[in-house]
Image (cartoon, rainbow, N blue to C red):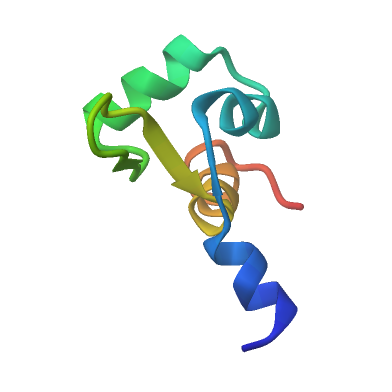
Length: 67
């Protein structure tokens, strides 16, 4: 597997994800609830986790920002 592919699958928490997108964590949670962003959940507490690939997709397709 190439390093770029590994990077795409790396999981980050809500703080790092919201900073990457430049939005408030509350906004990101709302987008997840609306189905605009896909997030996994950790067992137990249910914290959200996002892949970098998904966050890049959100930047392009939801926010209209090209890297």
